[in-house]
Length: 218
Image 1 (cartoon, rainbow, N blue to C red):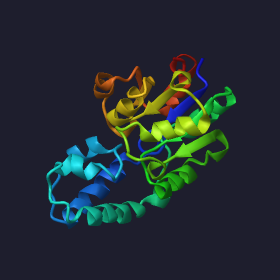
Image 2: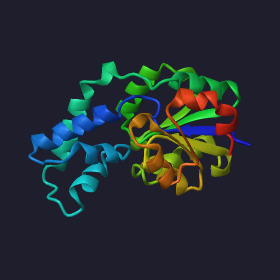
Image 3: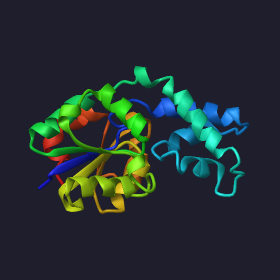
């Protein structure tokens, strides 16, 4: 019996993946780091605590890391009030709530970014708990944010499914043996999500909503 549904936020419920991609690309360029947008896009879903190491390598010169992160935050903030939900996101959260399950956000975003996205979703009435990078020791693919969400809701991994748009979501859920449903609305293909371990893949929350009776069961 599924008692809760854990959701990623960026790219899953809110259409931000490409906004983050452009913001990181510009931040890297400000500090003379040339990173391809395609590589940045595939790293989206990690938090700011690990994406620079992932893209520049663990042995890169870290002198500008804090400045790059700050630049990304500043550049991304320009989009905050134009952020929009992915198709059917609010309706899916409402449906989960109406079925007596708990809708839980487990995000690698900062608390400030998480709050902005929740405003864009306009779904506070349907979200039981929301955790951010600020609540955890490390971002995805580490399972820390997921573990915090489970601890706060007193749900076990056996009682939940995870919904995310990146391979990092799937790895984080998989570390706790939680099945992950993939969505392609973040720009990662169905083939990549399935290869990473997604149990099922849909285009966006509305497509998952239309199949929810089967899709949200374990």
